[in-house]
Image 1 (cartoon, rainbow, N blue to C red):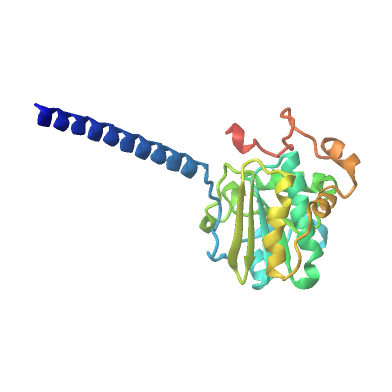
Image 2: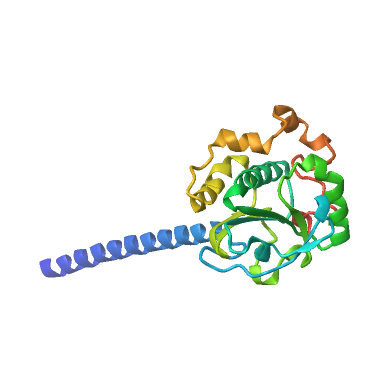
Length: 245
């Protein structure tokens, strides 16, 4: 009888232990799944190569000229900012990163802002109309491949900005931003600085680049030629925003 009780007790303990292990495994699997869901991919990943593509420039003397950013950079350090849609925070971050890249032109850093839209003519008209208020200081062009961008790049239309940092036509950093914020500027600028062996700019320096007219521009960003939609932080686009499709 005693032996039978011992066997029963051992079986009960094994059952409890088995249940505990299963619960732990289930919780781990759920956490892993949740973590995987938070990872967002857009564009070539680190160590992958950049293939050629064309944009139609909409600024300066080169207006309406087709350019291949990859060929133009000729393997030099470069930053590509793909704009899927644009909000005030995204506009500020784009100015900060492109402004920093432009400040390093003497060190052969190249930067292009690539606008993605299916209605190319409307996108060109919008950019020409809003160019003064956007305050971009690097070449801006509309992708000839529409809102999906270059097919080989695998850009994610559900993010607002895809920022690629590259050297020798190979990606060294990739940032896929669903809700970009100026607070991310230092993190994005750091790998750019690393390519040219420079100290990374601090947040205050990047904020100054984001708002070249100071705080007044920050307060009035929506009233200086770039009108905003009814959504409080979405810049007017020549076609519907991706979120509304």
